[in-house]
Image (tube, rainbow, N blue to C red; front, top):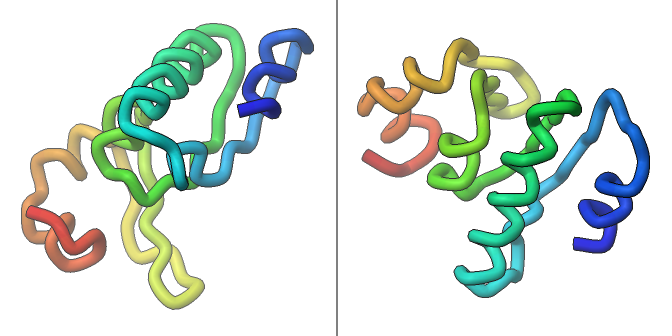
Length: 93
């Protein structure tokens, strides 16, 4: 959360965020999502996140990495619509 706050202060062209929802209460996750969504307008964000709801809300595109290899990538709409891919790689349907 501190890193996200620091990103607001600086003019970053690129921001790497690794699992910002990990260990946070759901209400705090919503606030973090809102903050990242606002930063998206002026900053390129690379988000690593296992919370699919959060990632699919924020992300425009995705990469799925399995055993160190990129097994799929594309627009987030594609992943939202592909139930088989979500089941196979993300464990959700």
